[in-house]
Each structure stands twice: as C-alpha cells, then as structure tokens.
Amino acid sequence: MQRRVIVLPDSLLRLVLVVVALALVGNFLWFSPWVQKLFYPLPHKQLVFQYAAEYGVDPYLVTAIIRRESKFWVWAESHQGAKGLMQLMPQTAQWIAEQIPVAEYKPEKLYEPAVNIRMGCWYLANLQREFGGNIPLVIAAYNGGRGNIQQWLQERRWSGKEQAVDRIPFPETREYVKKVLKDYSMYHELYD
Image 1: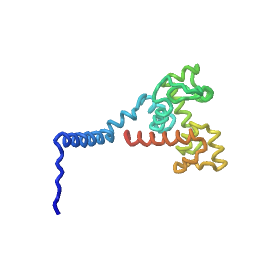
Image 2: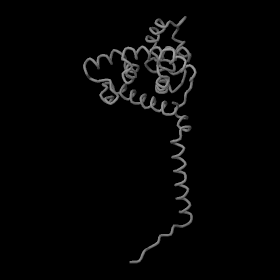
Image 3: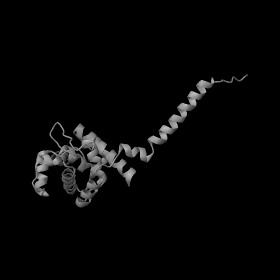
Image 4: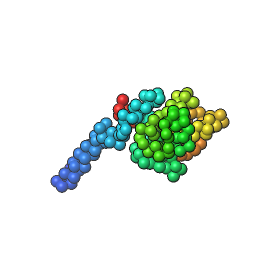
C-alpha cells in the first residue's frame, strides 16, 4: 500500500499557523485574570468596602448586585422607577432613610453613590438578618421582594437553596439570582 503525502501550499500553511497562534493567544488572554477584571471591575470600591464593612455584608455581593442592577451607571433608572447604582425603589429608599437615618433625604439623593451604596448595603444587611444569611434568598428578596420570598418559603415553592434556583416562581427573579450568583463567584475568584 502506498502512502500519500499531502502538501499544503505555503500560503495555506501560514494561514493555519496564524489562526492557531491567534486562537492560543486569544484563549490565554480571555482566561487571564487581568483581562477578566476588565469585565468585572470594582468601581466605587472605597464606598462599597466602607459600607459593606459597616453593615456586615460581603463587598463582592454588593458589587455583583450593582453590576447587575445598573452596570455601575450612577444615573440608572428602571422603568419601574428604581434609581441609582443599587436600583432602590423610592418607597423602599424612603423606609431605609428613616431606619438609618439619612439626614434630609430626598429621592434625588439616590443618584449620589455614597448615599445609594450606603442604603443598599443597609438593606442587604437587613435582608441577611431576615433570611438567616442565606445568600440566594437575600438576592431573590432584593429583586423579587421579601414578601414574595416569605410566601414561596411558606408554600414550599422554593427551598431557598442554590441547587434549587430553577424552582424560583418568577422567571425574572430566577434569572437575576443565577446571574448575581455567577458574578458574585467571579468577584471572589478574581479579587480574593
């Protein structure tokens, strides 16, 4: 039996080598922590860490929530009326302002990073106390409302376990919890 040897033209061989080299370099860059940090930045780090420490919440959870809620845009406003970095609803923010208290609170203050992050961290700490530190429950309550979460738990519609996130009744909250948990994990992986 005679073997055939395939000879590639020089131009095709060079193209294959360039494609392989680009794939290797691209793969290296994509999975390198310093490139991934471009996709998972830490804007407002000083404020996040300050208020997270003050209220006893994980700063990377705060950052993951800000990333999902506003993509770090200070002037973000949802179609439901949530405002600022942590997308606080005006009525929730008013209640938080009375609890902390926030001096001379007005809804416009939600666009101030220090005020918004402080109030959001306090609210996360409040949810953590209510839900026994269960992070998936806290994230779900932040998005879907604490009353809904309490109802789901009472009716056994969701256990609050991360492994059962697919059982969250609200599709928006289900996807939100998945995405925040992924971001939270990435922030720990990149910055811890």
